[in-house]
Length: 109
Image (cartoon, rainbow, N blue to C red; front, side):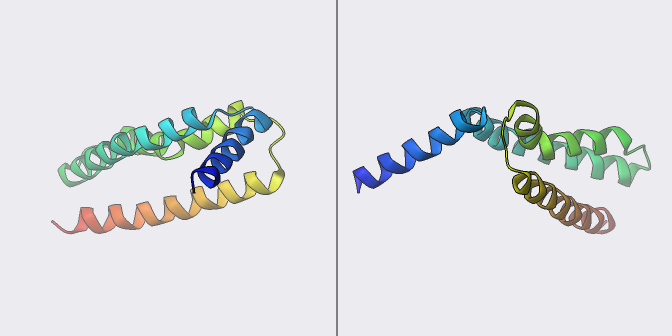
């Protein structure tokens, strides 16, 4: 089992070297952005309920939502086009889902 795990880690880390992206940095940004995205959404909902502008919280939430993918787009090299297409699809689907949840939460009060 240990050999299988080591083989997986070697393969995973080799992807970073092949595409110019450090998987540890990508994963850290991805996980680290979760609480910042959540705080931004809370800020957005609070502003919406108070009738204040939601522009800045929306920009903040959007930035944290795509921050790991921005790193990939900026630092990545030789990334196949299908990966860009898939990531754009994931971002759009996630944005649609998040917007629906935010609208529901904003209307609940």
